[in-house]
Length: 139
Image 1: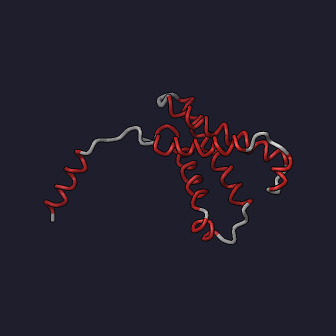
Image 2: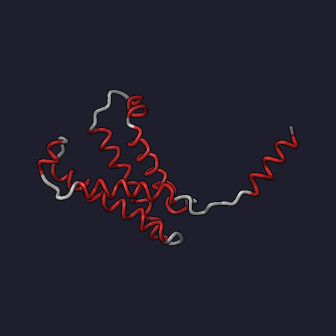
């Protein structure tokens, strides 16, 4: 049994490290937020009212989605700078806030309903939270 563990450990140590793996999360998340932000333009009162939101909130969400997606991409381009780390973290925080609002506006019956039937928003929330917590220190 010990030789099996040693063999598995050697195999694991010999695997290459993929330092740019954060792009596998960063790019799709950015695309979703940029696309959703662009789809809200031109921002108008009728769209806001159809979701039961004030115009000002709808305006902030549209621009927030657009700039959070762009910020997440820009934040990943220069990895070793403090400013881009802050841009990445702020974009993640904005994404978490927007997705939280989307989940609340949909008025789910329970937390279990969110986990079982709202998979996309759970994914967006968790990945946004990942970037909010790790910034550019994710590898």
